[in-house]
Image (cartoon, rainbow, N blue to C red):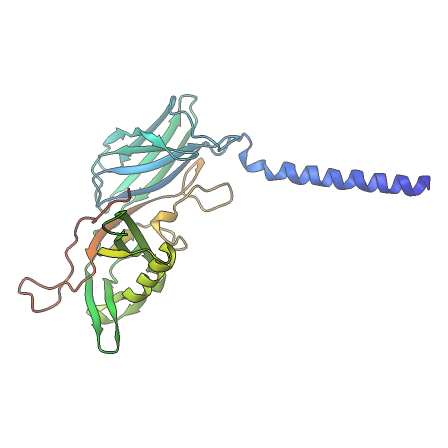
Length: 302
């Protein structure tokens, strides 16, 4: 009986040791290190007047955002040498600070973002913006036996299509609650190549399908008033990774994941974005379809 008791005590000791070792390994990515200093994530948009990036520190805990004191973030145009200090925002997300600047970002230009602490630890990332977005054609499709919607053609001169979305602006329960809501539907992965318009990437938008998904989300008994529909298109620069589904997915990366940040984590790319109405785009005389003219985003998320 003594030998049996010793065996079970020894087995319990081994199991506890294995559990402790396993728990210790799970915290390795958050331990102090001399390789990764900052996380930098986001994009520079050559079509926007304000640029935003998120910067975080690599440390033991990610429960609270870092203290901006002692952190300096700069944006540099590598061709002209122009450098600006990015400003930290009054609002933060869970584990990062938001930095912004109104520095003009040009197409086909290379930029460097540097995050540096007063202790000398530095992370930096270099990215190049794409050329201007090539022609986009949108034509309404509908009629007898044809589901209403649009077809989109994007000139295949674009090197990387980083994002393509159908965006709906609706009011829920108009006249009572008047809740403004924005719903987005990803389209990038549905693109196929076509010889239309001398070579294009194309896809189809079915309004009834998207409306049905909105109705499913808001639930039975909710009245929906569709205010507007737009198409959002983003071209990516040479650093764009086609495995990323959209520019909204440039999230915080832990060690071992894809990153283009030197001495840090995260992913930053150059993009060029445009918004278009979901309707046939006509030329000046209104008789033939023509490349679509970009417009402003209809609503911003509240």
